[in-house]
Length: 301
Image (cartoon, rainbow, N blue to C red; front, side, top):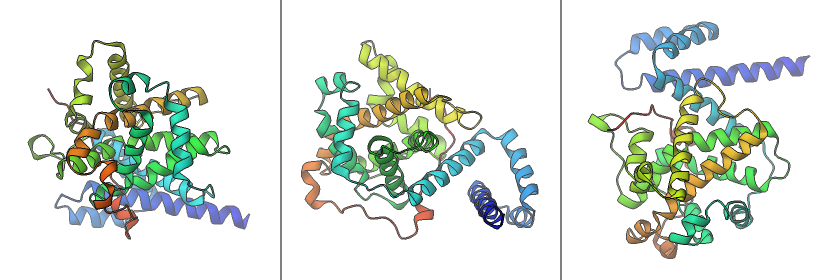
């Protein structure tokens, strides 16, 4: 009984920390110090009720809250996992799993091994702290999904959600490595997923595709956009088969944008062949401050 009570207290403390972090992030740019003071003095139940009021009004806040919970669970899963990370083995597993899915892209662009090498080059290269935090989560997610034979369905589902939620931050990091600048939002607002997609012609132009492969990836991109938004309200996938299919869709999109960005990375001096001049990725000392958040998606014409 004591063990159960202790674990429940840990869970409650974790929920409390997530709620406080989401509230502080939501009001970080607003002059509402007095309101924040009031919030901090509320009980956990009262805070949850206050959060619910905001959820009913603001879609973006719902996405932020879900993103924080997904991130917390993924970090916990990574922290408690004893599964060894072997990048060479993981790359082979990805090649085996994705070669059929990426056949059309590879026939026009680069080979799948080269695409996957560049994916990990991006994850292993330093950009800016608020974007580099995604690297550990994405590598842990891919490693457990593809190389861990003992992964449970719930952990697989958690890592699937993490891949969906972090696609926006991944695009932002890739853009920074190519342009040495950050993606800008409309009218000076914080850039969201739509802005990140718009920054890559290979993604933005998918909606105009006429060939079968382009139409497939256009549908994949719309799926990820829908899953990212729907996750704030209900589960996008409910069965193991749907989760496995969803994983293939979102991983294919990571590889797709990399395939069409390799030349840009090379021109920026940051291709795999030029790794001698690149600072290798290291985890930031303040891990909690570096994880990118799931921003509200905006629409472009």
